[in-house]
Image (cartoon, rainbow, N blue to C red; front, side):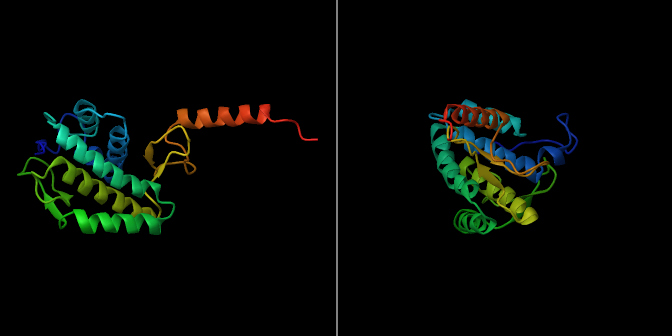
Length: 197
């Protein structure tokens, strides 16, 4: 079962609303999908990601939890692979309709500010919580922008997903590292191509 974070609305780690914004929760989804795509993601690696995105206290994940979360990550990857909002919406509707409970508000017994959940209850298993909270965040981003909430990295050498919302032009790569690697590879291909004549 999931450990329920017990925090006040003005805790020492910063403003609760910033740490648990829709965008932050969507970025947590991408980080977990990426961590779960690793060859053998360990519970320590997933706990590290969860703590980086606001989970408090011990994060006790069993091998079974990790395996089930990996199945969820594969389902969520389909949302990131969607080229258009309609395709992302169809995938999200399928996930919402088949794998989440009714929308509800919770304060985890008064330990947190009120916030929405789509999992069955506050003690839902990790995989159910991961799918429900991810679907909720990705749905709100799609609704807000009328665009797919994320993408797959355009680098052939990378399997990462990322959230597209942010300043500047639309991104094609998950990181500057991938963008630079692809730019250097394209430059080398152009230099090694035979001259036209």
